[in-house]
Length: 321
Ligand code: GLV
Image 1 (cartoon, rainbow, N blue to C red):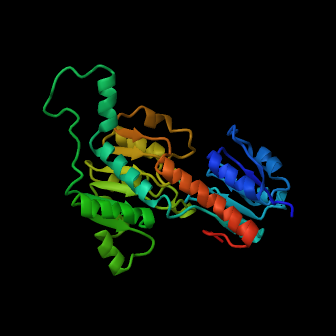
Image 2 (image 1 turned 45 degrees about the horizontal axis):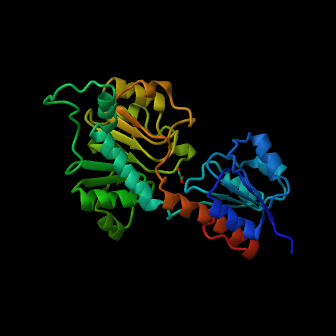
Image 3 (image 1 turned 45 degrees about the vertical axis):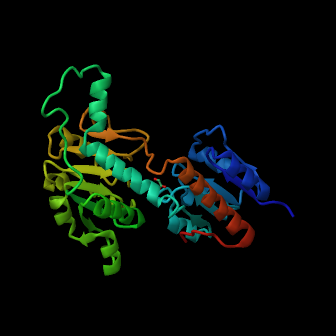
């Protein structure tokens, strides 16, 4: 029997590619060329499956131009690059990679919060620039993590994993806001209390954003929200670009409306708002929250298993539609 044809749209672990090649006729992109939408459509011709990452937009126009396509398996838990209703209407299965990255991403969120609160990037730049000549009582004095109040906006799997670290490991008071409230047992396990968005903004010493991107979440944190936060507060975004109004945040950091921010995701990334690059009180990382080798491998394997499961056995492991 002829193997189904698939496209792997970005470079991937060689062992995952080899696994896919056992089951499929694979067109790979190990040179990791960033195709335009038109080039992606060209490469997808005759392909029943696509292994995608957040950098390929799958929308109605692409689907109309790729009638053979049956499944797109995203190597990410977030899937705002997918127009899921359009995929459903076109009869194309969509899958993501939940669970396998939860703990790794929670670790990173915590690390970014600590780096932000304790001014690690700013002080490292100072040292590297040869500016450290003496001790001073207030040199790079930041804010405490232990015993402080952590606010979490978006209380899915990653938010819950961060809450557990905070409540049980660092003695933090954890408050959260989410579209729906967790049940009492889950709240207790996370050591977290549900509050309104306004209370979250006003009472958090550290505010962590872990909500999925949606049109409603666009600029959920803008100038008005930043103005409600404590001037000593830190803001950390490991969710998606566009949830924070980056221009407003840069302005707020410059004017010390809040103390500091840690960002792993940006509006229009990999471009970063130029004003963010000029303010010292922000830690900037290039969308790496899930980037440990074992976790990225697990994500790639799950995306591959979704393709194998669906195209060969009719069942995707982690379907979105
Ligand atoms: C990373 O941002 C992901 O959604 O997996």
